[in-house]
Image 1 (cartoon, helix red, strand yellow):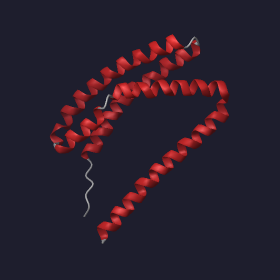
Image 2 (cartoon, helix red, strand yellow):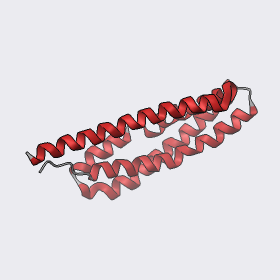
Image 3 (cartoon, rainbow, N blue to C red):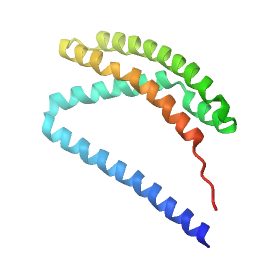
Length: 145
């Protein structure tokens, strides 16, 4: 009976955190749209869209592979950290170049070019963070008592 209560409690907290995240993101988007105005919010959304597609290319499906393989054998964590960090940083460089080439070819706004250049730099710490998050998830043990 105690295990059943623990599972229900964990499920409620996980679902609650997801709902809070969704609501917060929605409210933040509404406030940003009202605060920034039409033109500036359009630039923000454009930059965010470029980063979204850049992250897809930079991650390239590697974090789930890390989680699956390291969860089976925790001794692989160090090797996966170094190898996957190198691979994802390499993909981030490629993604950075592609994002900026597409951004420069599609838009004739120098300010937007600079903002895309700066915002795309977040791909690099994002890649390292994704590897660390995947390793953390791989080392989690969700057991029912």
